[in-house]
Length: 272
Ligand code: NAP
Image: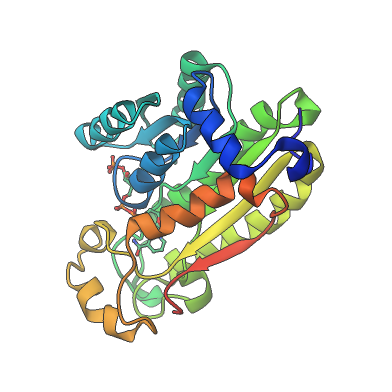
């Protein structure tokens, strides 16, 4: 059944959450890039709320397995699937593995993303530029396509929710650091608005979260290990956010508690 039913018709949020935890056949979500950072926090919170979780990772198998173990300990089910989300064959494998393990799909968190190395536009190489655009734009599009095939009520699916992880860089532009990255997230914002409207009548909600400065590995991976400490005082709330603070909003958008929210972009950025 499509998820466009009124909230009243489906009962209270608290009652639904309890049902998920007790239900071995609970809803299933795929989290791309779920091994670390914001993706791992989303996977853990989804598991704690009774979702069965498919954790995708690219290279950090042990980190992904730690997230799987923690979700299983919390009483839900989880698997980890390796795959580069910029590669179509890997995206198809991820969704096939999810089908095989759980036989249904109710949610997708399009989280896997990279900044690439900082670079002014007049110095950027074509290959690193393509890589950022492929991971941050092509991957989420391909994942959304596969999720819609399974969730759309027009294709006999039961509806569902897609949450895209954008960035405050889509608004700020990333000057002097990564305009390419900001532009890739701008594309995700536009995709969220358009796709949300495209599938709204098919029981699928599509929303995005725009994190600000969040304390994860992404800054050190880009070669800027001091970036969080340097920029934190410039945030109106005078601190960086945590992955868990982002996950709270992501899982709200994934859940039926946001049942009338679609094509929306929510800033989680401490006012930045
Ligand atoms: P992170 O700590 O660097 O973690 C990145 C995750 O994505 C890891 O699980 C990594 O897998 C996975 N990944 C990277 N490339 C992948 C690929 N090609 N295919 C599949 N998985 C891939 O990053 P994060 O800070 O949590 O960022 C998560 C999302 O939030 C990204 O979309 C990012 O742009 C966005 N965001 C972050 C911030 C911030 O300040 N941290 C701010 C705004 C937006 P492995 O563990 O296997 O490497």
